[in-house]
Length: 177
Image (tube, rainbow, N blue to C red; front, side, top):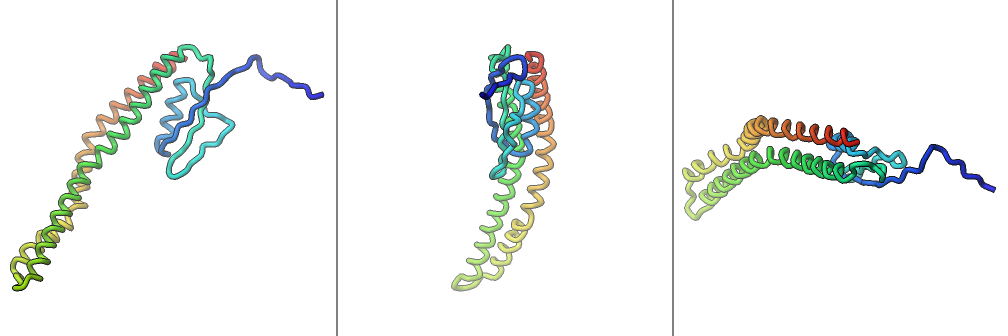
């Protein structure tokens, strides 16, 4: 007859959570969620698919202060989402300006092409439109880099503030454990 041997002092019931995130955010989630009682589930490996990572976590169901920890965890999640928005906001305006300048260059080149292919070709107008058109095609990468550098300086302070807020949330969670 099979005999079940009980190892350990007591039964622990767990709740489970899957987090799907980008690889660069995985460490932040693992480190942060530890302060809310979550630990990596040893029964599963971290899986990756389509540029995303799935983290499998578990925590004791009978955790004290669970409601407050869950509230802090949601606040942590919203701060991480705001970090992503801040990073995306850095690249959006420079990209839009670069695209706009490129489109203006395309319109100028189109005007130049129509000027030279008209019934009576207007070579002078073609040259007048082509020169700024080619310039507008050449400068978007430089404009993008300059505006991105300027915007990066502005958002570094906002990101540092968010990281400080995340640290405060994690410290509060750690005190509740």
